[in-house]
Length: 423
Image (cartoon, rainbow, N blue to C red; front, top):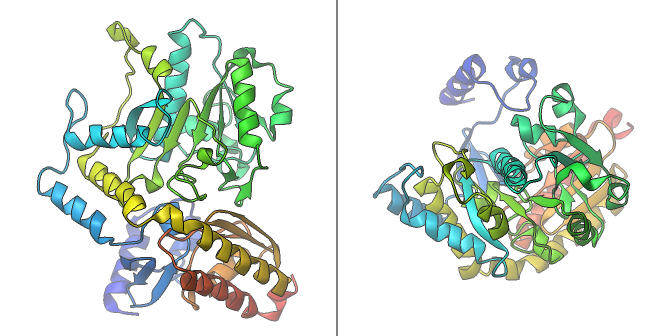
């Protein structure tokens, strides 16, 4: 190990606190974490000079690859002007331009307003608080309950966490946030009394932290119809699925559904900078007009950060100039073929689940973490959710990169010790 690598790791173990990480395991002297120092395209390099395919887009964020010249140039240009200015009582050119661009992806008269925040959790918090205040200001304050789907994940701030269905993450905080009921299907939702329900929240097309589990075709349309019949607001969490992951720019476009709130983050800036947006309708916005007490008193110091806006606009323009969406179906089909053969070849693979370039490879119990670690030896970097390996590369990957990723998983499984293979 190089001296600088050792120094970085020692400082980290002495002072840093990593998310979703048992700290005793992290700080164990035998544990040697990777120190990522560089990226280019779909590749990452660690401090020891080893190269890896970024198999989960740096926690589901990167879209066009690392160090993309166009996004780099946009950030540098904006940095030469101003890095940040307040969005409270002021405006700046790129924020209005980005808001207009985001709204342009939806039919006129639908999603017309954009509220910027910092990350996926805050995008959800905005939708939750905005929907509750909307009810208060339209004479329906009694409609304060939320419905979420079992095993879903919507962030870690207290309001967003109350919607979470993964017990390991959220059970200890039950009852500390808003009123939330949980269902597993639209059919179960039909049994609920809608009278006090404010909004339903869902990850459209596929649940992420629930081991990459797709919803049945047509489910989202059925959910929109139920909400319309009962006057319930629909909040779509597209923090993971947005910006091309499922094959369309937004997952809801696959079923022609327009929500009352659309929450995006992660890929909004191409995975470069922390930034989020909550899109909503003119009907919601109009309820906040009028006297000062109707205003939405919520915000963040870095709302509409100019560097983030510059990165986001550059990222969105790449979807057109590089024909990203046009190229995705062939890549998704190629990945589907690779995963099908992997499942047929290896008994350790229990199931494969895919939606666009989002895939989950479920392994036999106890193998997930081991296979991920061994895949590093074959040039693939990703993380498991329990025993499901996530394969969600940047959209810039080519078929040979997908070949490498699946071959790395196959080789990692083959390299398991006999005791692991028998589990």
